[in-house]
Length: 278
Image (cartoon, rainbow, N blue to C red; front, side, top):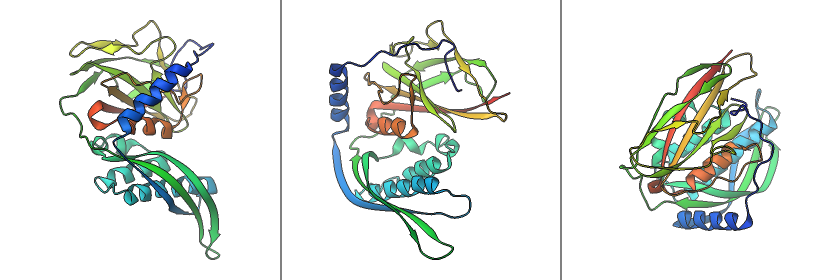
């Protein structure tokens, strides 16, 4: 899904400084439960075979993130975090998306800063990429709200190129929805968008998306089928996602950082994997 709207966006509304401040303040309230700062956390990766230095850097940083979580005492469900970061390394979120354990993570990396990077040649056959980070880790003191649930119907597993995506949504509690899409090459926000403002979803009511007279067009330029991973994030309060450009493009890291800045009792997440074929 390279572009999800038929219409081309001409100008994206700028977010006012006041809205930005309010957003950051609200996020801080949600995530300011148990935060800890860990420093000089190292991660490593081997540069072997087809692994490029850039790929090794990503793996080393993800290794450092896992070590930062361990250092901060996030031992519950550490395998869930490892699964997430391993998926990031391989650009394959299928296993993570089909697992129910991701909603039970009791901690997350809120932010991190790379302090150093270097490549060490151990011998003629072994080259190691080493990264060191300082990280801020959130440890949740809340559990998922089991009464907060959502039902999404109408999404198929396979679509033809340029076919339209539509679906029906119902929730058990009044909530707000943000939808992301991650492919092997890009990540972006589907909803809300310039033509569809974020609306309050009333519990037990059914909503058909797209809400307005626009199209979510599933398109790929690949000769082989393209895998798309849809992430539906329901929140009890309106929490705006802002780390994107004017075309609503963003990164995997921005998406997951935003999701895990929201406490488990305030969110419900649903995942879908679909393919687009020519």
